[in-house]
Image (cartoon, rainbow over all chains, first blue to last red; front, side, top):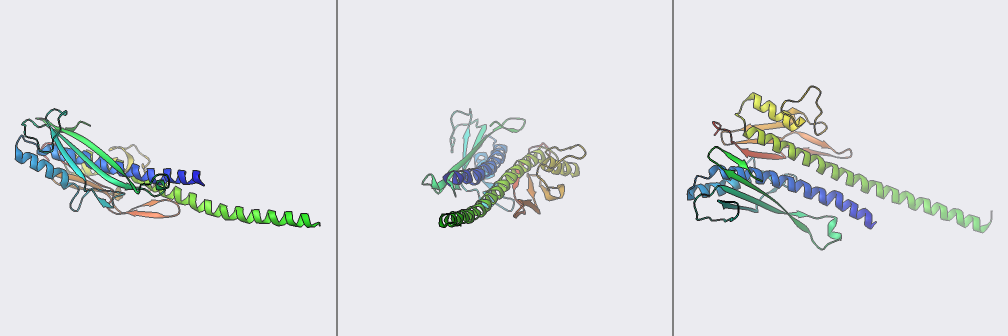
Length: 139
Length: 140
């Protein structure tokens, strides 16, 4: 019976985590590109970039997680000029890279039998670069 | 027939009833696991397809050709699929894919499609939805 529950946990809980990961990855890819498009070297551009990343999780065409049922709320947007030093509120000029990280708690149904957790954190991150010509996903 | 033979027959009958009960329980459990697992697998496939479609649309100028290519990409995994191409998700057709293009973004959704998990159907109306900002020059 333990083996059966473990298999059920594998099928249900890990399958759900896989779906949530795919949804969050889609969101961070789009959000990073959306934010990078707004970068223009100014403080206002940074503010627009932050808003641009969050905008995709809001509104009538909002991207969601948990099979499209839950709003994405835990979004962190960081900026960098060199991909080494990431800051939420950068002061230096020359910011070219945007990293968007989305984390959400995936509920556990069967696997909570084996560990005392009701959920596990799933995270996805994407980095986009703004160049003179266009924007692109770096990772 | 001796008393021992009667007892052995009764025990065999009990074991048969217990086995039948356990078999029903296990069958229901495995069917449920299959159903949920298949639904997750199908939904993950749709997320991947819709993401690819939205990404493609973001790189193209809006128009009927782009809409057709995006729908094909979501359904067949190819913007220009060969004849008799097979859908990546059984039952999914290009009519189930919606593309909303604006100068700022392209949104791709699955509408009116049901995941047929044999014992149960799950209707997807507007999910998964993926929006990518328009990247192509001239579209913004």
